[in-house]
Length: 296
Image (cartoon, rainbow, N blue to C red; front, side, top):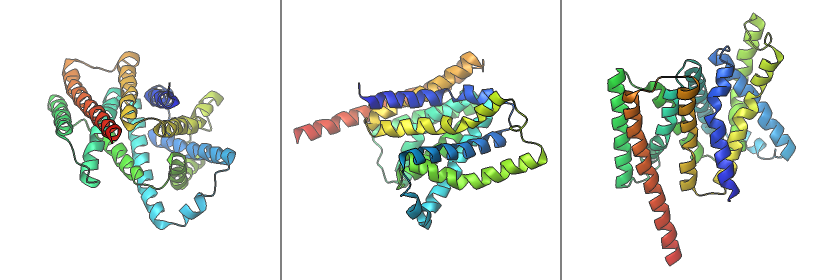
């Protein structure tokens, strides 16, 4: 088996199990947990760079205002996505959060059309239309937009758009993003500590270790994903990515007993049909491209 498939599967399984990790830390306010995630992620990726002796890229990047500006924007979107997700999990909205990652591939398609000049094929337009109908159904039934789902999909889609056109790889990009976020995180955590409001200092050792694990928990799936992306086709990667929201959905319904009745299932069903069309079109396009290269 191509090791890239294993790397991708592991990455998406780890992301799919995130609700369990964050639920374990539900006593900690969202902003404090987010700040810990920023800080420990930086320390972890710096340790990885130290082990790999991979430092030379950092100096030129820090002297390039254009690259810094782009990664500052991606860092803001990434932190917004992290914060919304942590809050959603601990507020009992795991199922709605999972919908955001089901919608995300279709948001990527729209962003590619709007910002990168990518053309959409008829089946892709159909997929987007069916997904929009599913969101409209959920909005009508609930009386409000599924804003958690849309916010997660849009922030992660915008982050992916910026990273798609960035000059750095996964490890380097995450290092720069967390380096830019670190001052905000450390000032906030220091202020909490000085005011006596920090949960870290008064927590049991096991709880402190769980917070420290926010670094590897964040970075390891990203590194596995990067390794997978270099080894397998994007169409294959796109199919495997549905492991994450599927696990999140199952966790929300089966482990934390969030409601998932027929009305919600109908809206999700429309989005799943859209994803099936989108995936079929991607596989068909890849097969046609391989056939054309073989004929040449």
